[in-house]
Length: 269
Image (cartoon, rainbow, N blue to C red):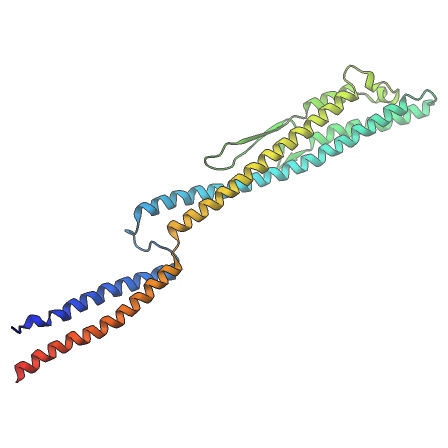
């Protein structure tokens, strides 16, 4: 039996066209924005996880910057320690010259004058070794690497070297007796070597931590991208599919409309 409901195909095709049009629109928005989630209700759980990771990723980036600053500070200190080492070597030379029994009074005075200037500079180098106003020798500076990472305490103690230098006098050096003192040049050299070892150990510790955080940052970035960024290849395929279906649906809508025209012709006859 032929009824007016024969035109129902028209409405079903129209409904399919509307749904497909919405999907095509969504695909276009995703491709235009580069984001998977374009509506508040899109994959809400994944979005929540992604935003948490985004916050942690931001913290990691700053942590790497903080670590890099610490490396720069330690490199500066390493140069200062190298200068201290050179001073100790020169003091050893002056002490050896002071042991010479043929030295005149003028010779001894010249040795004492140079030794006094070196010892003064030895203390000054440690005093002015600061980073943005923060003392490095004898100070404690924390390196914050962001969330879920332990802080690294950088402590380069210069007090020992300063105390040893105070025990080594210009007079002892000019007379060649500085290495015979209770705390002499040997102690001074050991203190400087200890600072060098400490600085090197902390440099490696910070550098290794930065390497770890860089790998973690790369992993977080990839994971965040998988949760937030659009799959351009897949979404382009969906768009092309939707556009083909739109063309086919339009053709089918014309067919459904033709059915209605047939009913009208039947009535007119």
